[in-house]
Image (tube, rainbow, N blue to C red; front, top):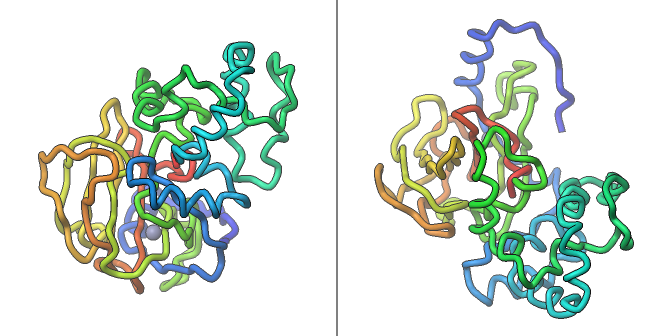
Length: 280
Ligand SMILES: [Zn+2]
């Protein structure tokens, strides 16, 4: 991954370079990540469940099978653990790092910090159902949603997530320009693959994006949160259309400033992009 390079760009220069950015999928740099949109059926969830051993953060928050299994097994302990949920959530948030439980020391956690407490609450819908979690998270402005509340509240926009270029500052893969912000998370995917809404909402843009996104869809989820899906080969929704989480919104492609088939997925808070991985 590109080392962030601090350059004293004026905002206008940065914006111009961002518009000129070129997307490149680099799947070889990253291991495959599983994706588990809860609403996409038993078959997918089962397939994901078999892949979840190495990376739990994406799947365990969204896979109904995993949640059910864990919920049943730990139901007896759930009453005592229910009061510990906030700190449990905080310990789960950094699970994508190499030290997933390193920050679990704060709060009145009396159980083994390695136990995924938030998955063991049969009485809570918020942690078992991403829609409920998102609804709860957006009870405040999206800009104020805590990382633990954001994590897992959006579903994977593809059946299988293979992250390539991450969100953040990087060297432009084509021009070599340094210090530009890559405004989304790229996922390597063949052209023509279904792209799904990461949550329910209203389509606010569906068309050609002059800023390099090619055929782009934007979905507004309310309270300042929106997502965008870029470089598509075709669009399956129209502006003003209501979509549910998991609805097909486009077919992936390589339109716009892109050199290969991939999905450039963005999460925006009040129209400012943030790292999508914090919400998946
Ligand atoms: Zn991108």
